Image (cartoon, rainbow, N blue to C red):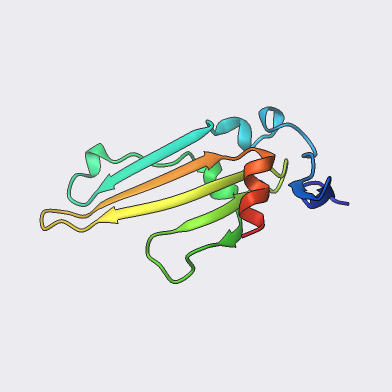
Length: 116
């Protein structure tokens, strides 16, 4: 069974062990356990962004495909580590505020999202 796939163990579905640990992965080693970013229209000098490595993750499951507020299960193509990606925004008269969050998941957490 390829790395990052599910296996049955004691009646529970779990993510299989990763091919390499995320700490040695060229993508995931550049991501903290939790990353966040904030942008506000009209205040670009204060904007923050997710690290470029986050853009290399692949969407595995999109829980809100037609929503402007994203909730996605993403996976590293190299080490098969799973992440939860969320966005939120607030529309304000003086400039919209956009937020992004990326959280590394344990194998057990990933299995729960994969089962949804």
